[in-house]
Image 1: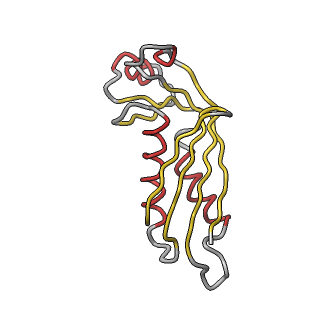
Image 2: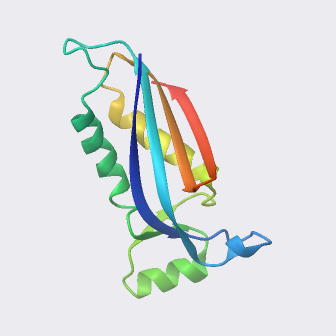
Length: 138
C-alpha cells in the first residue's frame, strides 16, 4: 500500500559556484510530495495524515521563508546572520538533489518508530516543471 501527501513552503537559496543565474540570490515556491509505502496498522492506515503533517511541518517550518545557505558561503552567511535574517545553514550545496536527500534523511529519522512503514520517497519540486526525487527503506 502507498500513501502520499504534498507540502508547500517558500525558501531562498543560491548556488555560489554555479556558472549561470543560480549563483545569484533567488527563491522558489517549493512543493514536496512525501510518499510512504508499507503495511496497514491496527487502524487500517500506513500513518494518519494528521500525524504525517505534524512530522513534516516540524521539519519544514525552519525552512519556510528562510534562506538555505551553505555553511562555507561566508559572504551570504555572514550577511544574513549579522542582519538577523532567517537562515538555515547546511553543510552542502543547496541543489534540489541535495535538499531532497537532506529532507529524506530528516523524515526517515522521524518515521523510524513506525514499524509498518517500509519505504519513503521524497519528491522536491523547485518549479512547476523540475524536481529531484530521493527514496530509501526505513
